[in-house]
Image 1 (cartoon, helix red, strand yellow):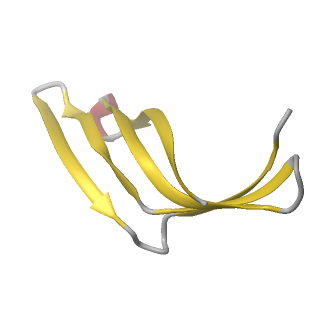
Image 2 (image 1 turned 180 degrees about the horizontal axis):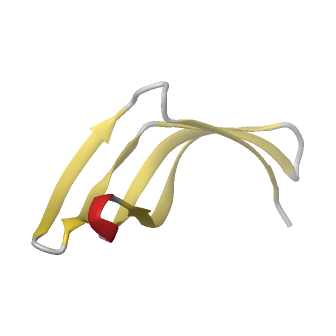
Length: 98
């Protein structure tokens, strides 16, 4: 049986590194993905099923800030829609139905 799985993921990162002249390099960023993952479900019995999802169709928004020195602050923002059926984005699962 073909199915679509809805997914949301959020990532947040911070890094801090001391550089020359006692200045601190502070980098931070975050990203949000909202999308659908197409897949297949194979029922092994009335309550158990194997699931496989491959690829995704979704929206990604990210913002990264790089603070190399007190006088040098860079900020990058991006928004994109994507569609992929790549085998590098595959998920397997086992489901139990009540």
